[in-house]
Image (cartoon, rainbow, N blue to C red; front, top):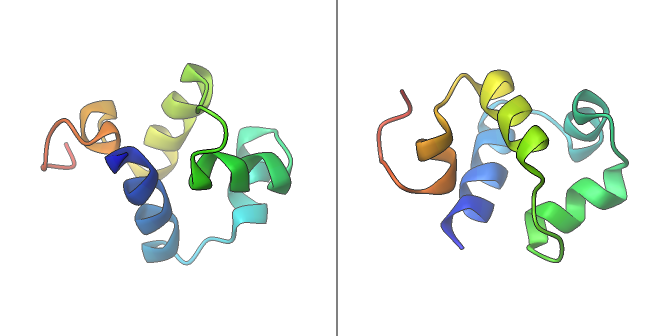
Length: 69
């Protein structure tokens, strides 16, 4: 799953912790870690918020395009 790698890479490139991103999304760090591992699917409302946080398109985050915008 390419989007899992992109989620982790974007977070690490921004020097954010899982705890920070989880807080931004309004969820727990444990649940966010499950999203990054692929144990739980990422809800659409969290996908949208992550794209806003990292200033990327949904297509980029999902691995459908290689350009961020």
